[in-house]
Amino acid sequence: MLPIGDDNSGRRITPVVTYVLIALNVLVFFLELNNGEAFIRRWAFVPARFLADPAGDFVTLFTSMFMHAGWIHLLGNMLYLWIFGDNVEDRFGHGLFLGFYILCGLGATFAQMAFNMASTIPNVGASGAIAGVLGAYIVMFPRGRVNVLLGRFVTPMSALVVIGFWIIIQIFSQVSVFTASSQTEGGGVAYMAHIGGFIAGVILTFLLGGTRRALPSSRLYRY
Image 1 (cartoon, helix red, strand yellow):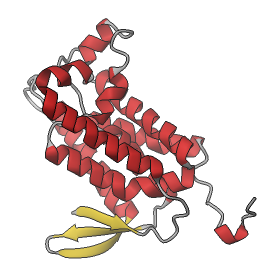
Image 2: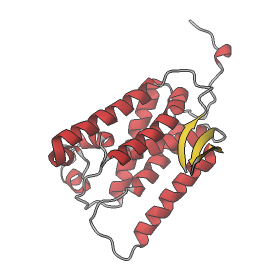
Image 3: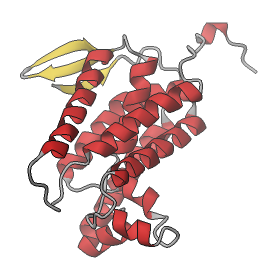
Image 4: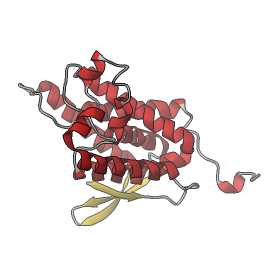
């Protein structure tokens, strides 16, 4: 079940911040490809390293949000940001959306770190911040229609179903990690970051007034 688009008929502004975020993620990924593992280890977030020197490693809280582990990781994240980010930005406005995105990314990072403080594995990805965008979308547009690719067919589905199914998968996947009989220090998917980012997104949406419906342009005075 792969989302490929949604209804943008009510969008009022050009989602400049969403486009810039996508461009930055792609740019940083090419820097990773060109500079190799040393670049990744320097700018990725490593829980144990951060806790040992928070001030010295502070910048990685932000740089890690724009790094990815491979093409599939990058393209999947950017697809979700492309589909859902523009509508959330439209409701928040450019500046507030950028702050919201960064805060969700931070919430995701700290959620993942809280469950694996001793880890020396580099954490990378925009997934946590984008999970926050999904949290905002499901609050703002629960009845929005999302076009989903099911096999060879495109089917419109409720955002509540599409995003709700996604977060349920993340929760069950994290539970399976907790209950695994043996856990190694190998890399993998940071499900707790997805859950933490999503929860941060839902909470921030209410705190920042994202639940207020935007006025139609015909009911606005233009100066």
